[in-house]
Length: 124
Length: 319
Picture (cartoon, rainbow over the protein chains, first blue to last red):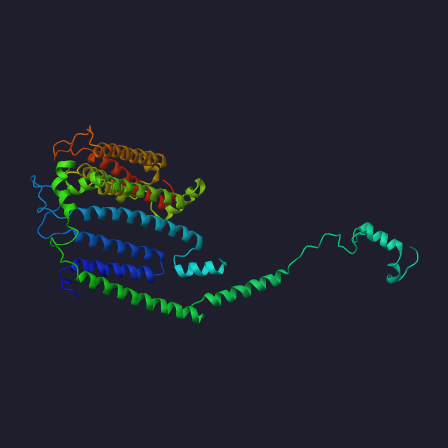
């Protein structure tokens, strides 16, 4: 163990959240719960990125009173990256939900094991 | 043939061979070739049913985790392996994080000269008070264009997956009405007051994207939420007066192509040291920071339409 685990508690929480989401993805058989797991992973990544850009004692990167020295503001780049992540996650979630709807109308169940059993029984 | 003869004797006669040739059961040149069309094979329906039942029973046995020991074992092994893997992943990530530089300090590798440059020159070069807005809509504008296109592509894909034709759409609307009460008085009253406020707030967020926290994405999401509330309260008949597939198509087309052309011009003049006609304005004023305000409006329109389109398509497979 390194020296900074307690100082980096935000990142530690994001790592635990990421693994919770990943476990959901692996162990849940319900498709909706799998998608929720993926969204938990997304949130963990946003938290990690926000922690990356944070510098203690500095303000959000919005120029106040014309102060433009780099010592006054936090790092703006991770904020921009979080924005990209949110947009992609919304799109991916919508796409996965619509695929789930199609699967449901075809197999009348959301359980992935049941769907694969039905697929095998149909001989594919 | 007045006299009845035994079959063996009759088969030797010329008449037998002639009639056999005439009826086509034997080709005289090729010998004993079958000339009649074959009888159609009729499967025994009972046997087929029995066979199908047996097949289903075997399949049920094979794919029933309670009765198939191998599958049961595999499931247990899978669960155990995934839990062990996730615990290992947590441990690995936590050890890695414990060796990272402490949070909130300046020594982190992400706080390098790029961020410094954005903060120090951002206001001067882009004219935006909000440095993040200046970054994503000026320095990294093509990234944001890509994001808008990701949203647009996602809408198209969802439309392809969930699209229904006219009759199916009517059926979906009927079944939708069974679960969603129409003309809910409380919801309508609340929506009457809330929807204008929400939409005006969204417009405020978009227009102030370069002056404070906010921008096209968040403001667009707020406007989209307002539209969804309006749709829930008043139904598709009311929203279809101003928002149809055609509206979506043209709004997205104009927003995305305006974004693309405006930013191409800006990058072209910037990269070639040409004089750009876009004024920067005074920082802090609403009409300032060059292209950022119109680009925010374009992005906001795309996002609002996308949010509304997602909701409408998930509810009834069309706008």
